[in-house]
Length: 491
Ligand code: IFM
Image (cartoon, rainbow, N blue to C red; front, side, top):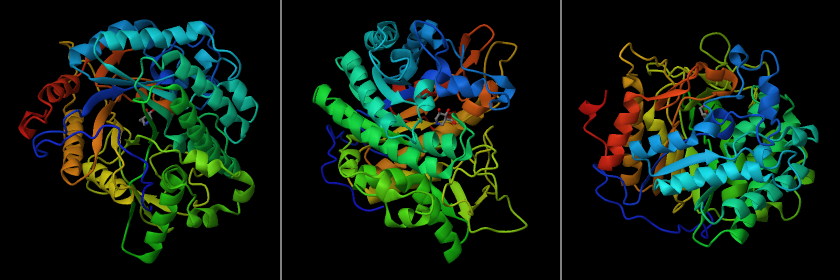
């Protein structure tokens, strides 16, 4: 990655306090969810199916045949959920908007009843003193738009532009932080490459087309949001940047890392932050797509409209090598099982599980240094770019004790380690403005259904009872102190 555009200016640079014990003044403490994962009410108030409704109803696609029909019933229980957030002392709540709830066919006028849900949610948050952070797109494309071609079709970016305008009009007076897309890598590469996510297509060319049109949709939305929102509003995009590490110091492994960094990271950071797709990525993938036909004049100017902050999601690093035969795990890239690689254009790279690391219930290695390195790498490549950790957290096999409590010391250790990594990055010069725990509460974990629990709050799906886990109380204490407790307190 090369240097950042100088016009990516912070709106408000927080002063740093003593980094070893504190976080910057104004550092935002939050938690995140996403519409399809928590809302439920899948067929209420005019909402129509999104690609995830269709995908989850397709036999064999989601574990146990789970769907988001009810999920955590946040649509009906948002008041109680906001009260819980207030009790925990959260300063911000990052939620996403269900496109097919507010614009059921993905085009045309908005449905007021759908918009009203988000108006009520935002009002409730503001009343509780919690800043709303709205994500426009967290993977749930209206099914009608997929039927018309989905993200591989350029017209979907046009539709997204209209949708962004609707949302800015509806919530622009009360939401100060906006995210265009959440993890477009997953939308493109898992949705159209490996097919483990909706819409479940496995078409390499379409994957790259989807990536470009997601970038375009982001840039267009930035333009629309800037045009409609008050000047103080913050506009961002959230990327799940892969912290790619070569297995050995060999040239072949370094090249594998370069390729995965290309299709995993630089396909987004290149156009968004530098105004260009990297030459090596184009060379690696040009047999799959005609980039000169795909990228129209003016696209890169649109896509590189400056953002106020870059949202970064991090869970675990990605360990790669050149193809190997025999020993070693060369298949598990942590993104689900498929005969089709999501790493379009770089299918022949091998993936490895880091040895000697504890793992989460997703089998992801726990490695806080990866978060530190990621924040420092982005800071090195894009000096001065404000960052926000918009997701970080872990799934464990949580259960309720006979006393009605949920003890999750592993999650506390995970959070402690990763927050310490953020602190270290701040001390070493990264401009990190906030941290959002994934997730506020247990929810629908995509292809894994309800089998994986990422929440700080336990959800008993049968009764929809919420039980704050020990980690929720721990996080509340961190927020109250604006600092990490001594490590011995963890657990
Ligand atoms: O649950 C997801 C979320 O929707 C996007 N980022 C990763 C999380 C855990 O897999």
